[in-house]
Amino acid sequence: MAVKKAAKKAAKKAAKKTYLSAKKTTFPKLRGRLTVEALAAVMAENHAKTEAAMAESSKKMAEIHAKTEAKMAENHAKTEAKMAENHAKTEAAIERLSENHAKTEAKMAKSREETEARMAKSREETEARIAKSREETDARMAKSREETDARMAESREKMEAAIGAAIGSLVEQGKKMDAAVEKMASEVRELSRNLSHVGKDLGELMEFIVIPKIRLAMNATGKHSFDRMVAGRKYRVFDELGEKKPFTEVDVLLYSDAEVMAVETKSHLTTRYVRDHMERLEKLRRHEDLVGVKDKKLIGAVVGAIVDKGVKKFALERGLCVVTIREEEEKLDVAEPETCRSW
Image 1 (cartoon, helix red, strand yellow):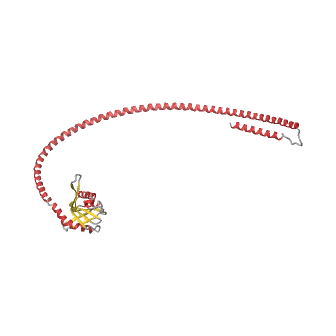
Image 2 (image 1 turned 30 degrees about the horizontal axis):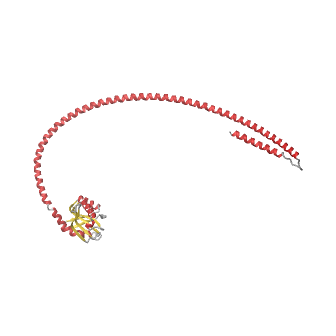
Image 3 (image 1 turned 45 degrees about the vertical axis):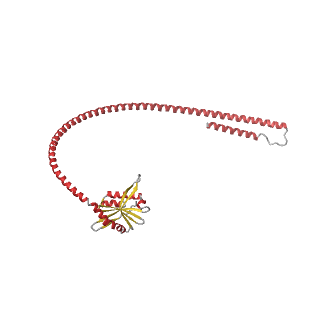
């Protein structure tokens, strides 16, 4: 295609050159005036020259075209030969690939047969080992059963003997237990008599130590300024049926303009009493209008004659003040948390 374009371009250039040459000689430099006949003769001569130039140009174009066709035919022949050569090489490569594929298939088939044979042999050997192991296991289990039966029979005899001895021992222990029960009953009666005084003792602690001193003890910490106190207050609310029922009771309430402290007193303070008091504080906040703590900070304190270290730590970590009664000295020791919790 490129050769053909070059040939056309060369032919066009040659024709243009011939035309320009003919044009230069068409009209000679005229001197004077020409007659019509003379002008016609000149034009005829020029036309003849033009025709000759065009014929020459056509001849050259034909030669160029012939050369171009010959070159294209030659190139086509070479291309066909090259394609035939490449085709032959491709066919040869395909044939080689086919041979290699056949060889690979044969190798794979042989390898598959060998693998299946090895697997069959391995399967037979494994089954034989499993059968042998099963026989050995059955034999061991049978022997173990016999030994276990013998041990169980021996253990049964020993157990029967031990049961007989235990029954005799139990009879003897029963007699001793009856005496112990009687002793325990006597101790329980004595404990009941002692417990009947606990309520009275707690009341005396409240009356003579806690109530007179709790407000002053709290103010002495420098963190509070309580100016009035209410003791033994029970609070009641109306239920769905319109009946007035108690919802909580507070041992002591300390009041100031900014805060209110609810105090719970126990002879032996425990974590359960601490949790109960925290629930009591929540109830007081829910009924803040009735209790008189609306728009005030509500805090809590627990008091005990016996306060274990773990219980004290438990209460302080939950933001409650802990007060320990020193009964012999009739004093109150106040421990404040890092931050008093507000309900």
